Length: 336
Ligand code: KG4
Ligand code: ZN
Image (cartoon, rainbow, N blue to C red; front, side, top):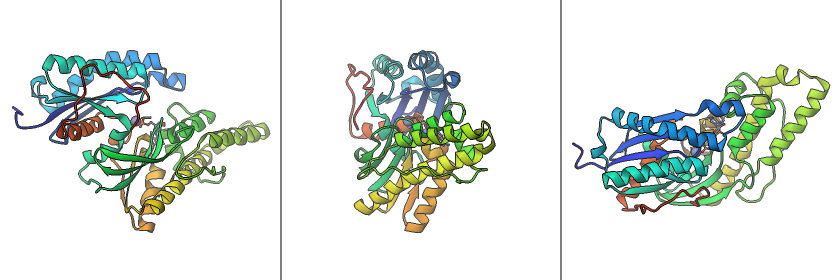
């Protein structure tokens, strides 16, 4: 039925979301996800639990993606999968599944770098950025400024030397007693608060970031105030969330501004789970208006982990004939 079309089945299993997607000729036909809420009670992702959950979810999620796209297994031209970076046990489930299915269908395999895919999520959208562009990639495990010259030609200009921006949200939120992952909770609470508290902005050279000092300063600030008033957090939760979010936004945009100055690029994009943050989205759009830059922010479903971004990346690798060996294995620390 789809003989003249490139049909990619994509699989994402790098952390705690099992995703499957069908991409036909570079367009998203289905994008299914099973989010693991089991980790919420532990305040973070438990690797072994995540891998067992992927094992349970992968077949139903792939089945759903195929059904929603209205195709059959025989229509698939290639299988793209996340090779890394990520949790070994989680990656293993997706990689093994992709290899076995590719072998049984006698079709090629395409390995995908998870962070490259976050950036290429922009090409799942109708409005696509033009090359070259700078991408601020902010997720639970990474914080990077990337110069994107072409679909598969990217250079990391700077990155975090310790915690990622998503981790800063999650760890600060944990100190406030918010559930994991705290990023979306802080986002929601911050809307009714004001950034009345200030935390120090780290002075890190060049285009690199640091968030570990920020987390410590939030901890000391809370300890000091809770000592004077045991209800301090409860009484000031919205303002605390607004202040935490505002500081993270200032840290991110300060470096982005420097990157633009150094690299003279007019198109700016944002990617990764933290780009779902409404305060950051608004601040970046405002930054674009003030500095006359074109700003690209993906739809929410393409910000956090999803398989459509893996499939879009897989599509561009397919066009280049960039296929993986059947002996490929996960690479938890995969370099971009
Ligand atoms: O990209 P992602 O889904 O997974 C990784 O590759 O890490 O990012 C997850 C991170 C978590 O730290 C989560 O708290 C954060 O993205 N996040 C947010 C929001 N939605 C997700 N942080 C702030 N505001 C949000 N609305
Ligand atoms: Zn991610």
